[in-house]
Length: 246
Image (cartoon, rainbow, N blue to C red; front, top):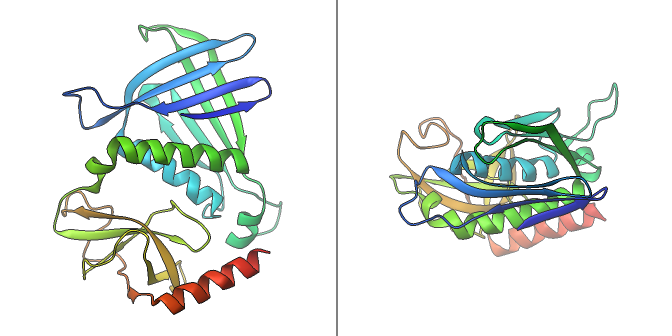
């Protein structure tokens, strides 16, 4: 269960195991809000598995400084919306590194409804999370997601895609094609990342197989991994990241 306490309110969002013969499209989630004035709980099957993973990935990308402006996710069937706010300074364009080192905010907006989903209960309730709270929340959700849907989302197909993160971060899942089909989760690989196509070593978060109609990007045009990093290259790059972070 991913739970946070802020300003006297406890917010919990958990991923529940699927029931037997349940749809493979909708995730089963449970949302709770409780404080001195509110006690709300709802079990939902209205957020798709893909949407749920998109939220988890977006939180890790926010922490990694990937967003230069507000980014919003809306799960209308669940009455839920999420606003991700990176660190900004008026009149100044910040680098990813600057955004990574400073605070960021996630606003979770919940439209509370009756059990029959026909009535609204007191409007929209908003919970604000800061960097450390976002990290804890995202890590717990990722653990629950992988346990519940890891086998499903691994996928089957003819194209091997690897989801990668910049060193020092995890869970961002920037997708690259692996034409060799040899890269495994936890390995380090060389890629060209960003608008300037800078060659760098990245960490492999996951490996998935897709067909043309399910791939996150066109297999014909998506960037490919260049090669696996050697152990020496990976350790040198990790030391450099750790040194610059101090």
